[in-house]
Length: 450
Image (tube, rainbow, N blue to C red; front, side):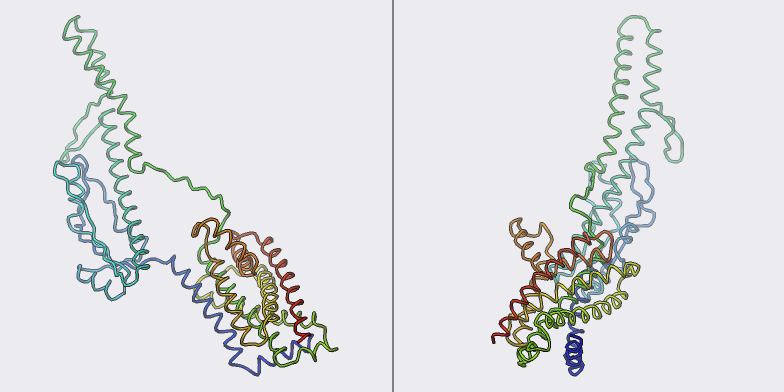
């Protein structure tokens, strides 16, 4: 087996272009896919034009609120590119330097303040999008809508808070500033106490009856407005969210991107190399000579899988080291990485051996490997809920029968503790390695018969 392994390595060494393509192509695909997925979490670049005067304040009941700082809130969630005019914002969007532009008009605060008057005007902001790509336009539009909803919520909470403060002032009394002057507000609670104290001193008659009705109204208003205060607080956010995870844990998006990239790399390198080298033995009529007495078919099969494991281990580790440029990896979990790579490579190598045993020549097996690996890889990335339940179950059966998805789960668990069960993923890979190894062994009988 050692000499067979050296022979296959010599073949790769004598074909440097083929070896380079075998390494570079899957790494390039994997890094591009991983980079594309991880970039989704980056901040959206938005041209930001804030024409609202710096001293503008939202007023409630004649009282100016403190600054809400909507612009600061938005720029904490997106990468703001500040521009000086609407024309500059349009130019930034058209050139593609930014993904969208957000314009806050000068009359935004005055329109908000008009909502409490008899002549309300609708506050409005302007969003400029470059719709050269419908997917990008929809994603950016959704993100801007979410940011504006957050800004609306911040303003609503502030207004609700001011409303509650004024309501408390009406109920309990206190000082109220008007044009810099403090005005004493008696409040319903104190008014009810004063009226109750005055009532016994009045003689029986219409005046006392009127005072009793006024006192009763003050007490009822006080009690009912006490109930209204928390209601006003809830108006700003009437529906609360209690987030409960019931479907297991998942790693962060960048970890998932790395796992996808590593699994794609391992799958292409291992499957193509094992399937191609095994088919090459038959194409060159070397299989019969090798198995005539030099080595058994099982040993030959094991050598090809070992070749794929070694190549997959080296290339995947190099790719992970290269991904350190984009994201920070947890190198303290390196031992788990090795276990995931070795288990995944063994199962994928066994699958490659089964494909190699099924084809007659290298070109056919290379095409077969691509035709099988790529669709299975994309099917493995379909999340639950993206398709109908019955179709998703069928996809789950197909992907469970191929080593890509369990290898992906093993990488996720190895890269981050929030990933799927590492032990179950390794067990799944071991079962698939044994099953595909048995299929490959059966396929080798066709080699002997040929």
